[in-house]
Amino acid sequence: MSRFKNEVLRLEAHIKTLRIGASVVVGLALVMGFGWWSAPRDLTIHVPPDLRSGSTRKWWEVPPESVYAFTFYVWQQLQRWPTNGDDDYPRNLHALSAYFTPACQAFLRQDYEYRRNAGELRQRVRGIYEIPGRGYGSSPATRVRTVSDRDWVVTLDVTADEYYGAEQVKRALVRYPLKVVRADVDPQRNPFGLAIDCYDGTPQRIATPADPAPIPAPPPPAEDTP
Image (cartoon, rainbow, N blue to C red; front, top):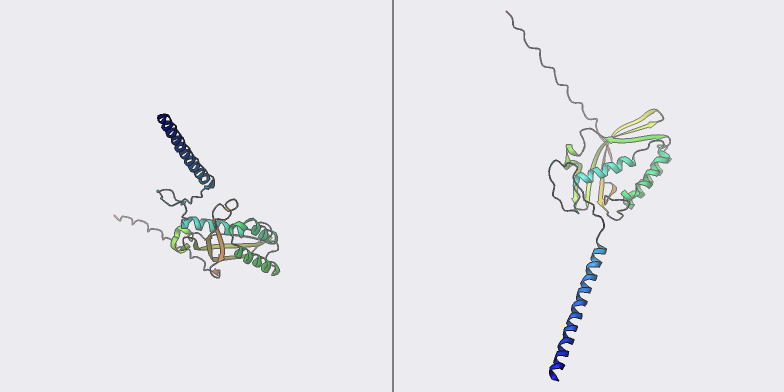
């Protein structure tokens, strides 16, 4: 009789072990499922524009060239008034709000009010473009200064043209020092994960780049005299 009782006890212990093992497996599956569910669906990878050579980067790092390209693109779009600055400037502020910090948005709204009250927006057409030879490739260390892995200072040298109707009323060469911060808070509206925090200093007028001196033509070959 004791032999049958021992066999029953052994089977009960084995069943208990199987139940514990199954519970552990279910627990691990739940933990792995939660990890899979909470993992990000998309990752933003910043790839340098120049792909002639290979590049190895950590996915969370933002290269300076990407910071410069982001800053110039957003700032150029903000300064583009195709028909009327009174309407285009506030519309740009609203459309690009995800690419500016809250403090910068407040500053730009004040700038809009100041320009509007001063009569600098009505019927104004405006656009900016990079000064040839003063882009990122000409001097990378000058164009983007890395403050930390989350902060940069970008220097843009641009030409700003303004028109009133068909008449050009302004052409200025301006240097904009702009602060850029990492702000990955709204990937749906801002997939870059960066935001402009307005000026790092006062924008300045810069001198017109000097035209390169013309290359003199080579002298004609001397004629052989008999």
